[in-house]
Image (cartoon, rainbow, N blue to C red; front, side):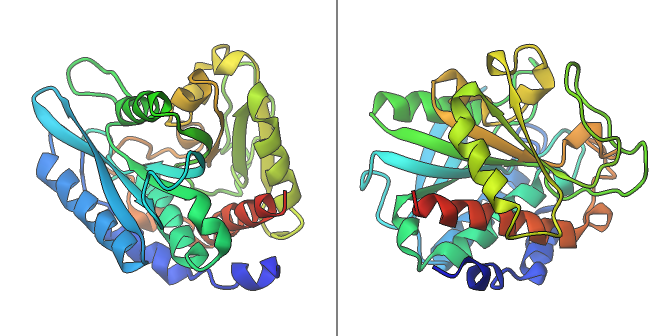
Amino acid sequence: MDIEKVLQKVEQNNLKNIVKTISIPRHDWYNYEALLSVAKFIEERFREYGYIVEIDEFPYNGKEYKNIIATLKGINSNKEWLLIGAHYDSAIGSPGADDNASGVAVMLEVARIIRDNPIAEKIKFVAFTLEEPQAFDLKFIIGSSQFVKKFKKLGHRYKALILESVGYFSEIRGSQKLPAFIKGPDVGNFLGVVGNGRSKFLLELFEHVKTFIPSLNLITHKVPMNGWLSLETRFSDHAPFWDAGFQAVMLTDTAMFRNPYYHTSQDTPDKLNFAFMEDVTKALLAAVLIKQSY
């Protein structure tokens, strides 16, 4: 298996085009029609790449929402899955380029490239909805919580790789802050891979990835107690997988700890570093291909 050859297939322009297309305010309550439009775009891309698209639809606050699931042979073709996920809604008033059009773009590019590899039959791609805080009760990670609860009951098992804000990059000293009880650099030029104690295998996968993408500064971090000591480490769709006993890691630029435009109207595509996003895509591809050899 020539991992380097696969990584060469990543096209930065694909990442740019996806981010630019879906970077519109798409909060589930205030921009419901825009959210549906972005969902349709994601569904169409998955189908274009040759996947079967199935919808996990559920009601919330009087409206219907959907997690978008893409597999090669259908969601019932397997019970043991490697899941690659990213949420597609945005915060109130934000076009959400970094949070989280960046994650959606990387997920779709990986789906495009991995399509003809045998491991693709074991991958479930999921675009989650309702990750962001709600307008009236501030609840969040609703779509992924619904998904995990439903499919765990159906006997599905997961190792999950969750993309959460992966496009912002800075070489300026002091540009990186960190959650409580976490130590690390003060320069925002790295990809963070955050896992819990149960996710040791996935964290080790990304340690192996470093040799394939020398241009990417990649830092893995294991949080104790499922992240309850540093609550911000739970602020994405990996947390429901942790709570359900599944292995999961979050790939992130650390969002609010680096990006000054986080959850604002200024979270736009021109603020992102697409060379960094290209490396993130390669890192995720490399991790999937390395896992194939285990």
